[in-house]
Amino acid sequence: MIRAFGAHCHVWTSGNRGRVLIIRVYLQRSGYSKAEYLGEIDLDVRPFQGGRISFTRKGKHEAGHIESVAPPNWKQTGVIPMVRVVHR
Image (cartoon, rainbow, N blue to C red; front, top):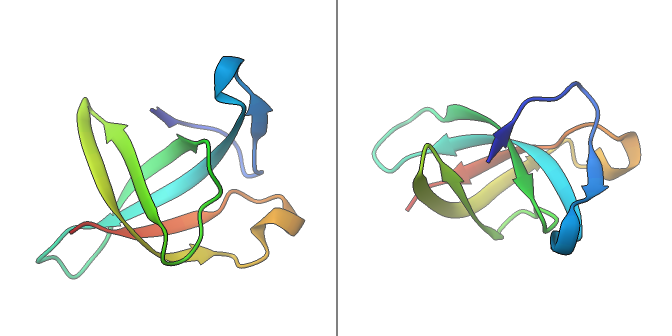
């Protein structure tokens, strides 16, 4: 699910899913040099560099490896983290 919110990190409880985190996702597909901005996506796990991420966009399942999370201190500052995902 892609969601649009303001400039600060939003975490809340949603039914049985527990804590939900909003991240901004940039997806770099195989064979492309630039990443495509996908928008803000709900996650129920904390993103970390080297981790794996999967989500649904426009009815299609997407997955990849997290290349970077910025800024590194996003938890302390309360901003929505930008996550660069490499599609493989």
